[in-house]
Image 1 (cartoon, rainbow, N blue to C red):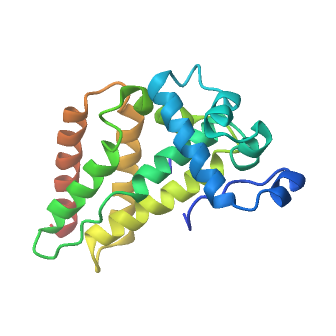
Image 2 (image 1 turned 90 degrees about the vertical axis):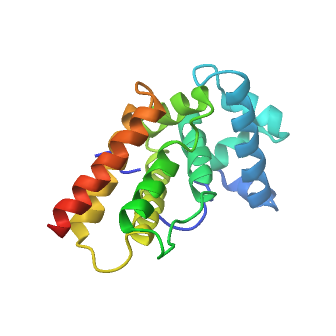
Length: 199
């Protein structure tokens, strides 16, 4: 399962000298994330390099690599930031199905308007890259938190896990299936999962 936990991503510090000289790590991380997003919008994941991102961000390559040891880690962190900016669906006046469906749809299509970013996020999250693993865990935690908030209390843990797996499957197919299709399939899956639990 692609489980894609925890406070804001702060990077993996791998260079003590750079860390000591960086008085504003949060600002550096934001600048590198912004620059990475801009580079992706103008180019492609295949052509993305940490050196070009560092140049655009106005930081040294060493600083960029300190917080993001690879371009896969950078792109995964960009996706995590998008996720954290989404609204929570917790309105008790909506049905549980409506809240959960809206949550899964939002997370699945958060980069739908940017095909290159969609492809990049998919490739980065699936990458066999140790630097991506901690960010994937944070994404998994964020996804679980949002699904749990939408479900509300009283649901079996298996329901939450199944919904997480459903979302992971949607992410993996996002590069090959239209987002309209994904939204429809997610809605159908939510109705099946929650309906079967109630039954």
